[in-house]
Image (cartoon, rainbow, N blue to C red):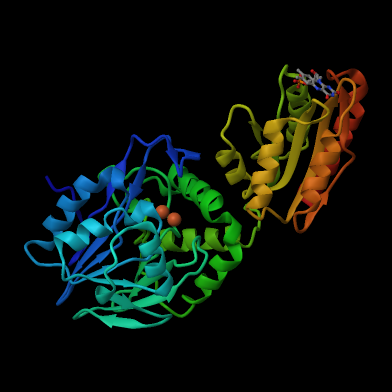
Length: 403
Ligand SMILES: Cc1cc2nc3c(=O)[nH]c(=O)nc-3n(C[C@H](O)[C@H](O)[C@H](O)COP(=O)(O)O)c2cc1C
Ligand SMILES: [Fe+2]
Ligand SMILES: [Fe+2]
C-alpha cells in the first residue's frame, strides 16, 4: 500500500523512513531512524527527484507508482549519487524505460561506477544554471560540488521558489507522518539532529557550503526539500536553518560558553572537570555542557564542538600518551575542519606521559585555535593543591567568555 504525502499541488512526497538502521554510514548512531526523501512533480512532464536507500525500496516503488497515478515517468533528477539516494535508479529505469536521467557529467560517471546499468542514450546532462521546462514549471540546476560529494547538485523550481537541496538542510530522524518542519518541535530535537547531520557529514566542507549559499542570494527560497528530515516551508524555519548553515559553515560558534570534554577511567579526571565546571557556573557562565568521551558517541560531542566558543579537553595519561577516546574526538573534529575556538586543558598523570603535548600538537594544526589559561595537571587524584590552578583556569575562561 502507498505511503505518500501531498507537499503542495502537484508535488508529492514519495520518500520513506527506516527506524531499524543502527548506524548511518555504518558510523553515526541513529536513535530515531532516518528518512530518505524523494519527490514527484506532476506537470506536463512528470519528474521524480532522487530515489531512496535499498532498505525502503519496496515502499518506495509503490509510492512512486501511486503518485504518478497511471502516468509514465519522464524525468528522474539525480541530485546526489550516494547509495542512500540511488539504490532504486535501476529499478525506476526498468519500470519506466523511457525515463530520462537528469544529472551532470560526474553524476553519470559515478552512476556507471556504482551500478551495472549503462543507459547513456537516456542521459540528460546538465550544467550550472541550465534550465529544464516541464510545463508550467521550470527546473534550474545549481551545482553544489563537495557538499559533500563532487557530483552534488541542487534543483531549484523557479515559479514557486522550491529548492530540492540534496543532503544540505537535512536531518537525522525518521519522519513520523508529519513531513514539515513546522509540524515538529523544530527548534528542539530536530535542529539538534540537523546540526549533528551537518557537522558530521558535511562539516569539513564549510567553504563549499558558503559558495553554494551565495548562489541563492537573489533567489526566493519559499520551500526547502532536503533528502533527509523534514521539509521547510515557513519563512522563520527557513531563515533559522539558513542562518545556522552560514554559522556552521563559517565555523562561528553559536554560543559563548564552555564545553568540557573529558575521558576518565576511575573518576579522578572527571572530578577535576566537574570542579572546573562548578567554578565556571559560580562565575555566572550559563549553558555549560559536559561530555564523557566513553559514554557519548563522538558524533554528538563533535556536533557540540560547532556550538561552543570555549572548549576544555580533560584527559588522563594512558600508556604514556592521550586517552584513546579523547584522541579520537580531537582527530575527528580536526578532520572535519574544526577551527576558530579557544581551548584549555586538564591532564592527569601518575608517572608521566605526553597526553598534554599530544593534545596541543594536534590542535595546533587547526586554524585560529587559541590555547587559553595554564593547563592544569593533577597527580592521580584531585587534591587541595589543585584548587588554586583550577580556580585560575576557570577565571581565565570565564573572563574570555564574557569579553
Ligand atoms: C591502563 C592504564 C594506563 C595508564 N597509563 C598511564 C601513563 O602512561 N602515565 C601516567 O601518568 N598514568 C597512567 N595511568 C594512571 C592514571 O594516570 C591514573 O589511573 C589516573 O587516576 C587516571 O585518571 P582517572 O581516575 O580519571 O581515570 C594509567 C592507568 C591505566 C589504568
Ligand atoms: Fe550524501
Ligand atoms: Fe544522504
